[in-house]
Image (spheres, rainbow, N blue to C red):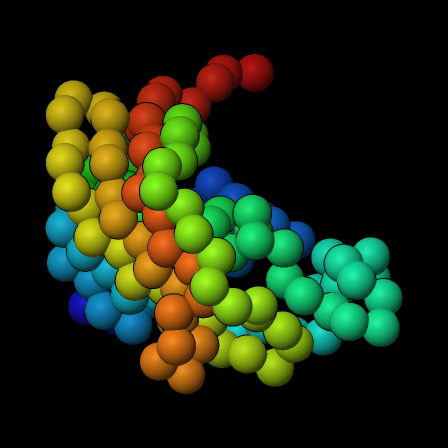
Length: 147
């Protein structure tokens, strides 16, 4: 299963400038997904991180993995329009190499466990087959706040 940005926006609650997944290349809803983030020099965070040496902040690489997991989870939820995924924790996070403008970030996530509305996923971020970051991501899918 492949998803375009338009389909991703129908699933995720995130919007510009905080949507960090451009495409889903492969997905088994509720089990695994492979996402893609095209890293452009025009990203707002490069203005200050770091002038003259632009590097994608590691926390945003992890957020991109979490958003990919969110798409995978929400795609399997019947009432997803009423739900929002919240990032609740991170474990075993390691950064291996920097992500820079022009890179194409491949985001691989595997759902390890799902209990009630809690989820544990393993994520990996790669550029040209080289591991950039990896983490165990915890999230909760809750009802959207009203108001």
